[in-house]
Image (tube, rainbow over all chains, first blue to last red; front, side, top):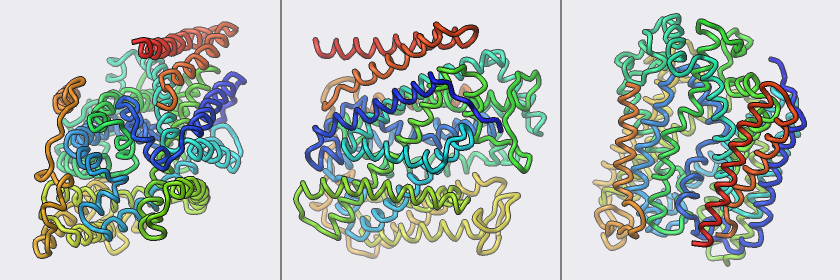
Amino acid sequence: MDRLVLAPIDYSILLTYTLFVLGIGWILKEKTKTSEDFFHSGHGMPAWIAGLAFLSANLGAQEVMGMAASGAKYGLMTSHFYWAGAVPAMLFVGVFMMPFYYGSKARSVPEYLRLRFDEKTRGLNAISFAAMTVFSSGVSLYALGLLLSALLGWNFDASILVAAAIVLVYVFFGGLTSAIYNEVLQFFLIVAGFLPLVIAGLQDVGGWGGLVQRLNAVAVKQGFAAGTYTQLWRHTGDASQNPMGIEWIGLGMGLGFVLSFGYWCTDFLVVQRAMAAESMDAARRTPLIAAFPKMIFPFLVIVPGLIAIALTLGDGGGGFKLPAKADGTLNYDMTIPMMLAHYFPPGLLGLGLTALMASFMSGMAGNVTAFNTVFTYDIYGAYIRPGASDEHYLKVGRYTTIAGIAASVLAAYAAVKFNNIMDLLQLVFAFVNAPLFGTFLLGMFWKRATGHGAFWGLLLGTVSAALHHGLTLPAHSVPGLKGGWLGVVAHYPSEMAQNFWTAIWAFSVCFVATFLISLVTAPRPDEELRGLVYSLTDKPKSDGRGMRPELVAVIILATVGALNLYFW
Amino acid sequence: MALDLRIVIGRLLLAIGVQLVAYGFFSDGRGASMNMGWGGGIVAAGAVFHLIAWKGKTA
């Protein structure tokens, strides 16, 4: 793969962004005086800022590059990750769950679990979440180092150390506010950097009509029906009919329900942004505001992948080709960098790369801010030194930021040594997040759910996910990290199908186990559950500013439904 | 708010947009048109953020 050579203007744009990021941290240093300022932005974020940060927390470079790569590999079906696998869950958390998170005054998701269930459930969630965030942040750093060394020839060690140092400076000084501000800047950089890429690419392939025509030819060449790469549901009657290798039940239940609700409704990384909002109404509007751009983002991050595969495999050429890996298969992960290099002249290339760098760094900062909050409140404050002064917890939060970033750097180097760590991380997410949604669903909407039920349900859900993974194997894989390590009793047509069904399995076992164990253990009295369970909580009243969240949710749902129908 | 984010976004967009326009002005061909066209759009977006912040303060 040829390396890119940057012009001085590209470096200048990158430097401009870096100075802004560091400047924000420096200015916010003076305003961050209490632990609430540091961990919760003083609960002063307007809904639009919290909303864009809520969206951007899930817009790390791995997601951006990964979605473009999936667009090239699976076609427009990748939009399921947005229109089925995100927006409905975002509406649900805004309308139904945020009143509990915000109204209960919990400072984190694990703390909500303590208030609703008990200490052991909180401990289990806090420890698994803290470990996941550090790993995730480390993998983000590793991917950044890998990209910069492969694409620009920069030194791997220097790349990850400089990026880690920049994130450290702005999170150490400005805490969550700094991370949120930079996430919002990243959002605008991605729009500014990727929109011209989509426009230039579409011009190249003859507009949307030309793209569809080329993709139809690609689909037929690959042995699928024409339209497979540009239609969402029409070819999901059987897993063999689409490149994703998944049928509509697995897609709807696994991605559209368990995985998406498990992530958007329970992952503190995103929920923390809404909890920083200035009021209950702002907190409820946060995911709804995020849902609007989330609906549009497939056109920004997936369409470049469609264009890339249409030019690489379609008829008519265009001078663009995705690079191949050593084994001869296409290197889909390089879709975005290669498209930037192909279409952008110096100047715009700097802007596109800055958007990617911003995504890497804010993805890492998001993990680090979630980690320092959960560690300080739910591990240090709960088990190591409870009842200390606010000043002490602020200091611990800052030191934890240093420790979290140091651990991320170590995780990045671990990723170098174990080249399967990214696969492992995805697996851990499915094991931990999917059952957690079962716990929350019962905890928030069934007052009879007990702490013992929640704890054992979570554990059994995770264990059953591991068993399912250990007994099944995707097609064309060998037993090991991809599954089948206990013996193969079933095959899936693709890894994605296996992931979706692992999640469905984990959720179902957790849900049933929590339900059954709760029935035979003593519930807490109603008085202790007010504000924590739906039937025992007053319905939130709107502040009268703007449309009611429920109405906004209905409008968004109708729009996303229309998009699904249009691209059916 | 500790820092008016609308101003920060506006200034970042202006800083980047102006550089692109200036670079495009001294380039030729596709580089000139793309940088000046898109840079101009970014400058305009930056100006809109400043305007929104200014209107918010004077309202």
